[in-house]
Length: 554
Image (cartoon, rainbow, N blue to C red; front, side, top):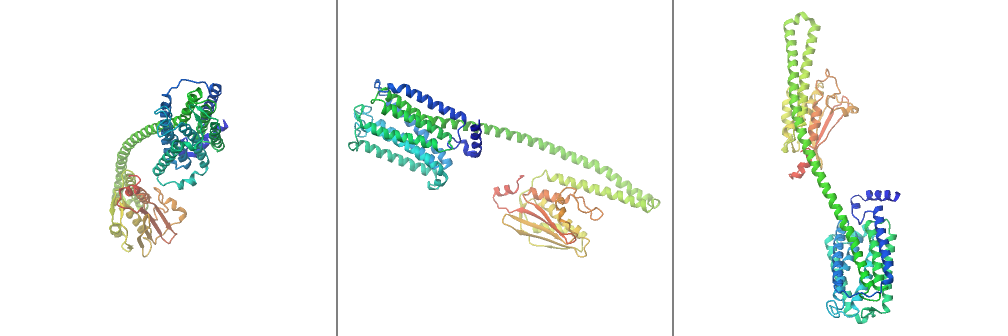
């Protein structure tokens, strides 16, 4: 159980790479399955070893069928492993895939040179020794590719830089190199067969075969031992060890324990070879089937989630319409009694003001002032709620001209204020919403500097690499920065209404508008030394993607 938990932890560490059998650690179930396959193969090997020399009928069709199945299996396995290599950029996988490509190519040469199959001595100028030597080269060199895979695993990331930048180029290099290697070995086994020791006499082995096959067998043992020692094992490592076990059984039955061609060892050994070629392919195809199943489930999950989002969007739109209707209804219902209160208070003041006395008239003025303030609160709340329902437009706005327009509308109540407007950069924004920002910030500056003898308002901007930053600075009463976090909340005020009138909604509107444009809002101030309110807007280009990035809610 502990080992199983370690495997699961390892899978999580690998992340997305861990879904591939070339990197994922084997589960306990996979280990047990591999062990069962090896034990079953060993039992069959032990049972048939004493019968390996038993002569059987010469089934010539067996050789091309066996060769065709091997070529197809090894080619598909090589393609799938090259696919893993292209994704992971792993030199070890590149070497292993090349090994499977080599076995596919050399098996073609092995079958073509088989004596008596297509020609009495075989094709390609083969002699009596050609097929046997190609078999030895095939079974001796593939373990060397496995050894290379095991050695390179530890340095995959470092060695990946030496491969061609494009995976396809590396794969083409492998194809050319393996074809060249097989052609060279085939030429040596056919044209140069006279220089090689004789290991076949007809369909039987010579004594020299023992030495050659022993060397080939050693390579298989070394590959198996290295795979076992190189930890942690992946699923691919696990099944490569199973392959090498079957490979050793294949060599033992086909070239050690049997007497020659077409005996029991010849047939059973090649069946082991076919199984060895199939193990990794079966696991790879199973993996791809599981990945495809996950992809289908993920796609279905995405479709269901998208459908839920659409349904939720429709519901939210309906709720927004209901809330909008409700807000207007509440606004109307609240305004009616407010107008009545203000109207009756005004009538009472006109008709009975003299008899009420000073205190009575003061109380009536408080009532009327409260009614007016309540009306402004209702207006501001409606304006604030509407901001959450409309999307910002995306048009070029001349902020300098917009600031001048806003100042001209607001300075009528503050004729003594001196307002300086610098040259401001144009932005991509909603002009109407941006005007609300200027209106709230400039009116705040005028209001809180109105008690100064000479109110000074400065409107400026600067351009940063990623954003344009605007500010409105005044020389008013300022505030303590300890309370800066309260500035942009709805109904949050730092002064009493009898000091400076207001509803506490204006700066909340500023923050909502700028946030919906992808910008930010902040302020700096000192008590009695004035305040400076900043907002930023993302720098824009003409590309649609950039515009979309600036308006995340659009």
